[in-house]
Length: 105
Picture 1 (tube, rainbow, N blue to C red):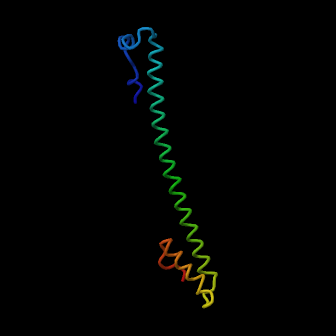
Picture 2: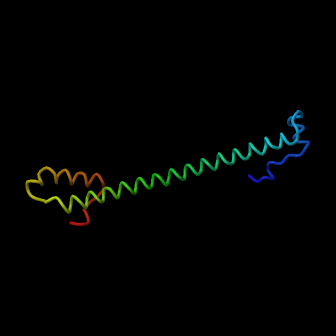
Picture 3: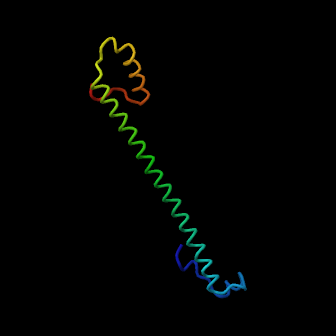
């Protein structure tokens, strides 16, 4: 909203509330318009900030998963005794995370 949109004529103000002075009525209109504009801007900014935060959380989670996969694949021996329990569960976890094949095998 532009400042010019908040300006009323003396006739409009008098018709709206004959007991208010011109300056009081004009200030009320301008304040209301500015408040509404600020409220809408704040809401848009809040939605944008939430979208940014959501993306950062998603990126951090993916980075954490990548680090876990790298560590497990690079540091835990794949012996027959380990395979029966851990590696079977590990393959299920990779599938849950949507990882078909770790990159460092």
